[in-house]
Image (tube, rainbow, N blue to C red; front, side, top):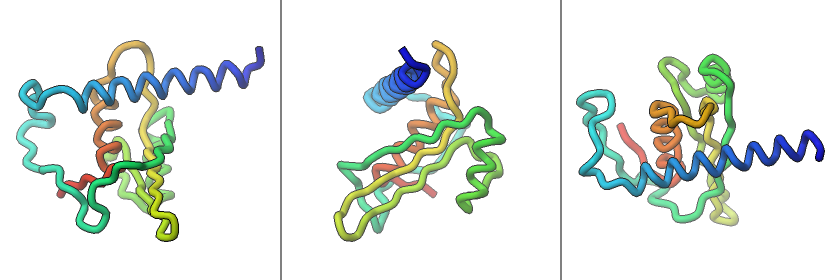
Length: 133
């Protein structure tokens, strides 16, 4: 088997693992959720011009470090200070389709990395039309 096959298989496994964790986060009752960051008051709400989306194509861009992620943010005119991930949602006016690019640092190992998992879930929520202050 070729190296490309093994790389593709590893990428598919990582993506399945990330979506499994995301499903777990989104399906857990808010009763069990504790405050993240201590006292955040922001609330998720539907984006005024986009609304909540039911179908979005996700493209995930994994980076090996925060430095590489922040360099990518600068290239996309996104503020890089204290940035742990970002997403860019684009709509096609002719077809009505939406594509969302998620930029995050790659999760490594078998253990759940809470910070990176929360960041990934946060960016996915933006992709489906949620916003916050």
